[in-house]
Each structure stands twice: as C-alpha cells, then as structure tokens.
Amino acid sequence: MTQHSPHAPTSHRRAGAGRIVRLAAIAAVVLAASAGCQKGRTTEDLIARGNHAYDYGRYEEAERDFKRVLDRYPGDPAANLGYGRTMEAMGRLEEARMALETASVARPLDLEISLALAEVLYEQRDTERLYQLLRDRAVEQGRVEAWLAMADFALRLDDPDTAQMAIVAALELSGARSADPYLEAARLAERVGNQKEAIRRLRQAYGIAPEDPRVIAGLVEYGEVPGPTIALPPGK
Image 1: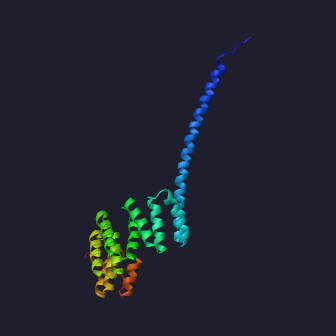
Image 2 (image 1 turned 90 degrees about the vertical axis):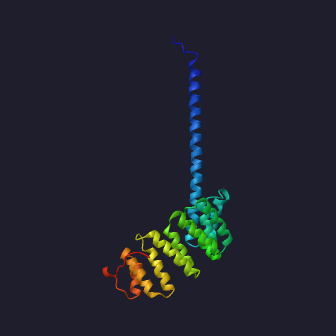
Image 3 (image 1 turned 45 degrees about the vertical axis):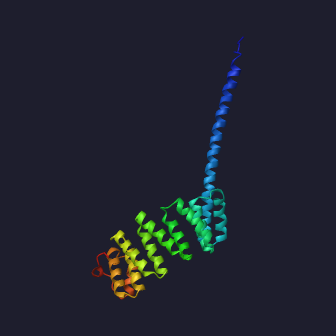
C-alpha cells in the first residue's frame, strides 16, 4: 500500500498561494500602468479634440475640452495654449493672456506659444510687452522668425522704425539662407512708398529662392521679368 507524505498537500497549497500572490502583484502593476496610460490618453485626446474644435470655429466646445484638462492640470502648456487661443478668438483677452503667459513660462522656447501670446498683446495694444517678448525670443534663441514677427507686428502698429530694426536684424541673422527677410523688407519699402527699394529686395530674394511663388509674384507685380540676370546678391 502506497503511503503519501503528510506534508505534500501543504507544500502544494503554499506553492499555489505563492503563484496567486505573484499573479495578483503582476495584475496590480498592469492595472496601474493601464490607468496611467489611460489618463495620458484622455488628456491628449481632450487636447486634440479641443484643437480640432478650435480649427473649425467651434469655440465653446474647444473651451470645454481645454478646461477639463486645466481643471486637473492647471500648468499643462498644450492645454493652456489651446485655451488661450480659444479665449482670444472669443474676445476674452485677459483670460487668453493669463493662459498663454502660463504656457510661455512652462515652454519659453516654444515659438508657437510666443506668437500666440504676441497676438493677444497686439490686440491689447501692450506694445512694450509685445516687443520685449519677441526681442527676447529673437536674441536668446537666435530665431529669424521672431525678428520677422516683430517686423510684422510693427507694420500692423504703423511703426516702420521698429519694423526696419527688426528686418535688419533678421537679414544679419539669416544671411542667404532664407528669402523671408527680403520679402519682409520689400513689404516695408512698399509700405513707405519706396518702390525702387522694394524691387531691390525682391531681386535679392529671387537670388536666394528663384522658384518661390511669392518672390515671382512680387517681381511681376512691379513689371519685372524673372530670370537669371535679375538676381542680386544678398546683403543689407
């Protein structure tokens, strides 16, 4: 007659209990990770949905989605950017500025945020803060786009002197890498009635980007015929 060890059932029970504990621990980790991913997805989904609503002019929907994120994460830069742009579109400029200032502090190198904030500052006619913001971005980051944005806002504010300063800085920084500063210089020259200078700047732009439709259209508008002989070297 075969005798079974009295300890065998206990050993099996302990092994089974150990497996249950390990499986429970693994399940807990998986559930926690899943919850974290779900939270992240929910935030990203809300921001994406808010941006989509904003793009289609459904500002009240966008406001709700961004607000849901900000109620939980007040410092989220993407949500603050979306909320600020939405508030600006709805004419609620103080709320827009607060949100965009918060986003700018969180992401000072993000030019999209800086330009959105600059638009609000322009609408508030806070010229000093507007110029300071764009100058800081241009100098600290070496961004041609920031200088060109300053030139654009200056022209909108009927401030050709500041526009000229910003364009010269953009030209020095860009060199021959981009036609954009020359196009902005042509715009300024046209604005002040200097047709000869506008054509010169367009010819310089043509030397950098001969296939750029903006450059070609500008030259044609002045009666110039685009071609190899019309290009001028870059420079101030």
